[in-house]
Amino acid sequence: MVTREDVENIALLSKLFVPEEELDGLTESMQKIVDFADAINNAPASDEDFDNINNLSNVFREDEVVPSFPAEEILKNAPEQAEQHFLVRNRE
Amino acid sequence: MKYELVSGFETHIELQTKTKIFCGCTTQFGGEPNTHCCPVCIGLPGTLPVLNREVVRFAIRAGLAVHGEIAEIAKMDRKNYCYPDLSKAYQISQLYAPLIIGGYVELSNGRKIRLHHIHIEEDAGKLIHQHGDTYVDYNRGGVPLIEIVSEPDIRSIDEAKEYVEKLQQVMRYIGVSDCKMQEGSMRCDVNISVRPAGSEAFGTRTEIKNMNSINNIAKAMEYEYDRQVDLIESGGKVVQETLRYDDATGTTSSMRSKEDAHDYRYFRDPDLVTINISRDEVEELRAQLPELPADKCRRYIDELGIPEKDAALLTKYRRISEFFDAAIEGVKSPKTVSNFIIGQMFRRTETEDDKEKFEVGITPQMLGELVKLLDSGKIRNNLAKSTLEKMLDSGKGALEFISESDMGGVDDNALLELCQNAIAGNAKAVADFKGGKEKALKALVGNVMKNSRGKADAQAAEAKIKALILGE
Image 1 (cartoon, rainbow over the protein chains, first blue to last red):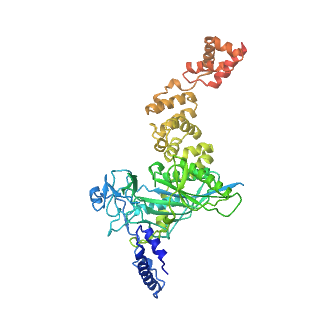
Image 2 (cartoon, rainbow over the protein chains, first blue to last red; image 1 turned 30 degrees about the vertical axis):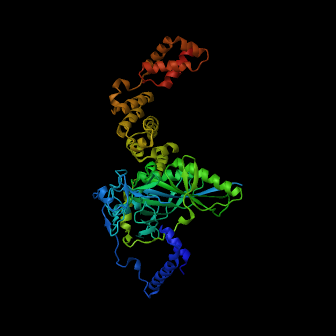
Image 3 (cartoon, chains in turn yellow, blue; image 1 turned 90 degrees about the vertical axis):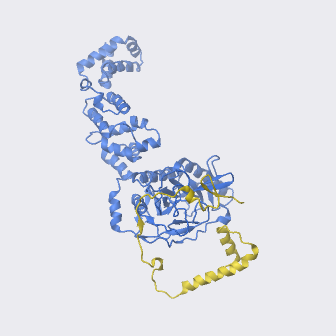
């Protein structure tokens, strides 16, 4: 059972603010998501390892340097930047 | 009541690969902010990480060097947490199927600190907190790390220090990391608890995060040990929490508030495929390992007759031990070579960095030649010492400073004459010696050594002078 406290805790871990009046609705939605996952978990299946269904292994790159991107490209989508850094405002 | 300290370490070590763990950006330390980055290592949506083969090989070498078992199948997992040092809000790490299982680090007191496992993961970016805000540089983000997780087997601060030193030493030997704590390429999280001496059950532990020097580790552990003992003695309880050590005040303080309690929701990273490690590859890597410091140290003691303490000094840095190995080729007394290295040559390489590089200006063969002259009795110890100084100053070989006439020592007649001259020319010293001043003899011997240009045997000269004076 998903509880209001679970939703509050998840919001906290995700650094999201959830207004009081949305908590009940979100708890209900979250329960539906978990039920959906449970349905998949309970589907009949063999002991096959779904963890590696493509049977892929050992995909590697060689240790060769590729030029990095210019800093202005890297910072292009930053909501805020300063002195060639990503800037994160502390809002507390 | 007496208490026992119980500690386990989580040690992060940056691997010296050329590129990051999942992309081709350079791992070079420093650089202008955000210039060693690409869409993969800043975690843009739609990018796909691909594992650097060399990271796996480096980690296997590290595992072999600490006697770990190399897994046949390893997988990458996502460790979820929300903090600006990780742009993706998860770190790619290993939990369920790490590369290396078990292993140990043996201490000089014979105790083995067991390892739980070693896993590979990506480093996070660097945060600079200033003007009340946070500035983020992702150059370090994605640099490959191994995390070496020990069992809680450490029982004293001295053991903790030696454990870190031994790890540092062996990782440097095998060339997987420079392990520079001050630059952050080696960092330790220290778990620590106390329990009544003789008790089997563990006490509640605290974790001191991100220690970046061996000195601070010792100081923080001492403080935390005292704090926990005081707390228990006064009827309180240790709370399991993550602590930060403040170098300036020498105290620890709580780092995370309760609501930040770990909830990493680890799961298999679907972007990265399974790693299969063939036994052939493991054996190939094992064969490439150099002689490990512990084995080298044992060999120096058992086969070369080097005292234990000296053997430890010689093997602390790989370059020094290699210099020694090359210098003793064909030499009768490896101990003499060791003495010259630990004595005169160490005086010229004072810092850790100097010893690490061990650039002394002469080749090991040059030192070997000098010791061979000494071994064969062609020159005396004093002359060898002063010659070594000149060699180290100039980078030239011994024969540049020692002429044919310096070799072969001083025959008995010549020694007698030198001693007679010394006595004749130093009436005061002779009188002092007769008056009971043993030390006065040194001045006379010194005179003989000077006039023979270091060739005379100082002990023989002393005996001869004594006999001459007392025989008069």
